[in-house]
Image (cartoon, rainbow, N blue to C red; front, side):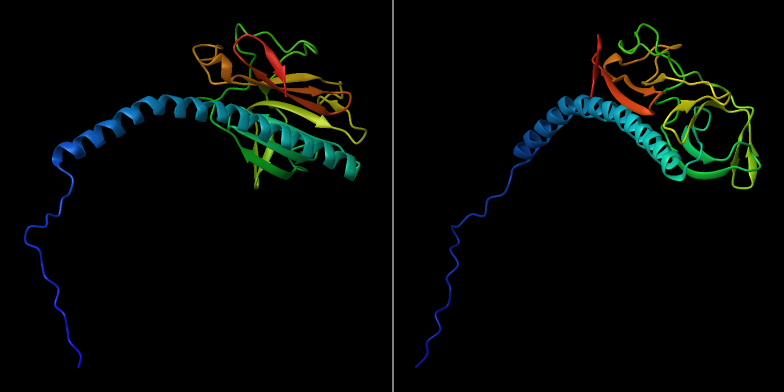
Length: 217
């Protein structure tokens, strides 16, 4: 014979939850921890932006150099401070241009690249001058639309591995990437990054500035 044993509810048992005071204490602790950690999170994100942009530019430089070597032709490379982008272009004039690749960059209000920030010396050695940005009179094609008048640093990777200007003059330079302050200063010296281009070989070197000196990476 089967018997069914019913459960007995203990009226004296208490189901205890969190009190309002306990919840307020937990929320206060979370708020304090967030207030402490947010400045560090922001600083790390800002640091990462400078570094990420430098890596993007270096990768595209190497791609332009490799394309010139593989295809035995001159490849144009441009950093455009006006529309915040970097481009690899085939062709020597607007009508014959063929855009190979374009990568967007952070806006100039977030990161600048067109000058050497005031008060910060160039990496030495090699002590190459800062990349010279100038108004682009040659221009480039944006789809079917010619674009001229942008503030651009333009160089050409040749099939022999060297790098030259539009006038076929060998060029070696350093591009600086930094969060802007007032004028040509930086708001965070420890977040300044540099890319040195060696015109004779097309090689590039990445630099980090720690607030007082440069270190190659």
